Image (cartoon, rainbow, N blue to C red):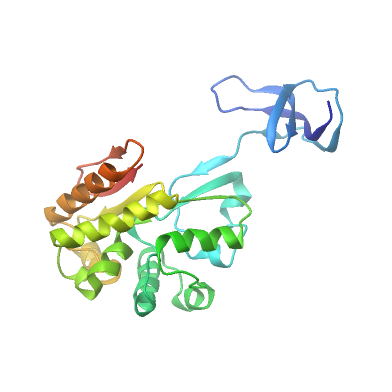
Length: 256
């Protein structure tokens, strides 16, 4: 049979734990169709002699939420064999966001990721308000690698509580609103939600001011996250896989 692509003479490490081996890899319709000594032809052939051929790497912790607006190659991650990135980590992100909250959301990334404010102000396209809109905008723009999303809790809290999100915990009715928005995000394709607590006073103050979280050492944030997780899970069509750490320096990542 004819293939679309054959990668010949490479050293294949397939990710299963098997020993590396010299082999060709044939691709048809975007799927690996054969691995071995391939004699059939292809529309395109790549000589991978003296090179490693592997599945693409997945980077589960990135903060490319803004950069995908202006960098479709998601550099420099894509330079190193990463073919899938998961963004929205640490509870920090730029969706959902009302127009009045854009500057605060931008400063969150300045504070947490040290991205210059001017670069963000010029680069973020703000084609969205809701989180599903944010993901749809990314799909319209396209990217050179696969994009996956966590829904970061900070902008969801701010979307519901406004500026008070930086000063207090959410009330039960507000938790319900946040949970509803998170369910909407998961239904649209988000893998779950994320947030972070920090133990140090200096770090806590920085996160409170720019990221809109309550005092990180306040146990009520833990209870709020658990309540939101339970609420989202109860309405999810698939079982939730929840990972909750109770260490002093904690990132909650809840996958649905």
